[in-house]
Length: 439
Ligand code: GUN
Ligand code: FE
Image (cartoon, rainbow, N blue to C red; front, side, top):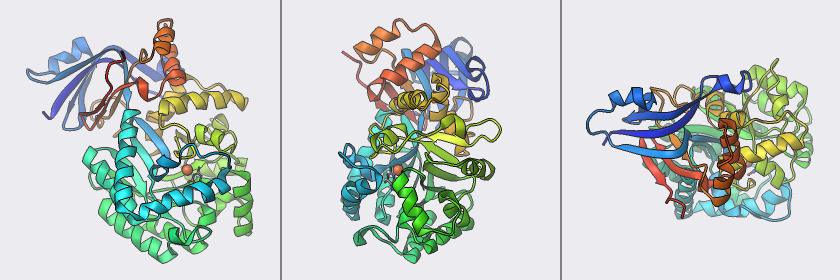
């Protein structure tokens, strides 16, 4: 049926926990009811109040002892790299050459692209992730395969064809013109079709000529509402290479800015090695930086300065990314746990559980200008939900038994949790993943 309801404890935000005390920012509805119809939340609130709207025959799923959140948002991830995860021994540039380019070359095959897109999206749902900003490969068919599968599932996804016309193997190169033409055709086919959104995706400054970056800027100017995603200031050798390729630009970010790639829908992965000038520019242009802690640790890239990025006098939008295959987990819970550890390691302010959850849900939705659709549990929002089980494993059950506050329950989930802690995932008002009850 088009109408469903779920009952259980749920959490949602009414303010930004980086600006307001957690108790004001995060709302817990201990015995909540969420009614969904035609893919949207129509009613939510205390069960005792909202049940009057249930109607006679609305199927009701009860999740006692679980904690329900808006679906997670992964703001930086490469679907073709799912099979290159756990590649040993290299930092960014040699890692790309040795492991990633050969893996991405396989996506000339539509069969490989379809199978991988299917596996990747089902893994996202098993992890409670319902929206992601996704890099495909240079092959246009890798984008078709991805959006076809996302459309079948009904997920809201942002994705795009990688643009790279230099400094990569010949079988992975487009040209400034072919990359432009192929992107324009994919935008016409997919952007705004159902829940699918397109991101113009130059891989990074090293693999695009100035002409290609200029044409990427043209694409953005031509179609309002498009996203732009790329990598920024991830690794010191990368930054040195960008400086020698673009000697007349004042910084790495300036290479993108001069090409018109720095607006409010620009999504920059990593942004580890940033100057104060770079952060101020990001604040003024409204772009989003994506904190990818498991990737930054795995490749030895460095520590993202989260609270510097969020400095109240010039806050920059920040979201979380798994960055598979440099990242080591598709779980946003695990990524939140690693972001906490990085905040301590970097001598930064200690990231709270509420703040981490904000970055994975409502904060990301705000950064991506999708907060009127996703990231919150409220009437009118699209019905994408993640049902977490704080007792999913014996260890979690042991720890959760002693967790008295909401902050403690959430912190236990993010430090000990992963896909095993996702009891169910709902997309567009329908259940798309259910985990068998732990033995
Ligand atoms: N920089 C350019 N391409 C990539 C990529 O695929 N992964 C990461 N982590 N950084 C990049
Ligand atoms: Fe990446």
